[in-house]
Image (cartoon, rainbow, N blue to C red; front, side):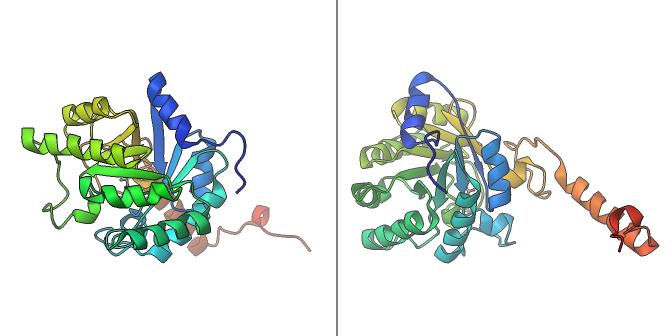
Length: 271
Ligand code: KIV
């Protein structure tokens, strides 16, 4: 878990935006997948609170806990040598007071070894972000569709349609930048709105379902690997189709065991 000289930093991400190089971010929730993702050369590994829906079978991220994020943050960090590791702050761990946010985000950095935290929300979170960056905690913002507000926005839907809503997102991004974020995730908004935000701020934007003009892109690993079969939003491109492969392997194993074909001599020990 030591910081090698080649480890990515928040400064590298800023430089990538300046140089026009796209930033690649993927989620991971455990050391094994984190090490595969890291070895593939991604820039940022996000320990998303999506762990609560993707791995834990919950409907939303709202019930994710700080203990859960500490646990997954720690095991992801153990698998990463090179990428920047960012951990999502779960619902209610940063919204109640700036003191709470400092204590809980501080625990995440201290107990997981992550390099930064991500939290959702616009201008209303500026004081909190200022408080965190003021004590040395790097913060990634998250605008557009913010999953912890899913009930307030009426479901999983594109945000920022119409001039007023788009203007609000741009203003929120400027407020987050002024408060000190090192990067902003833009989730589920029209490409042109993400384009406006990306031009309006000097910090890198990382899009998911927000079109091609962001400074980088993020996907949920299990979604892009085709492990999460029921989830098929328009923006999702599957780079593998692993769920059928997993099912086929398990069915073949079960058939082998039932037929007495496994284990055979090649998979058994002699005396
Ligand atoms: O929790 C998560 O995986 C995220 C990404 C969708 C950006 O916040």
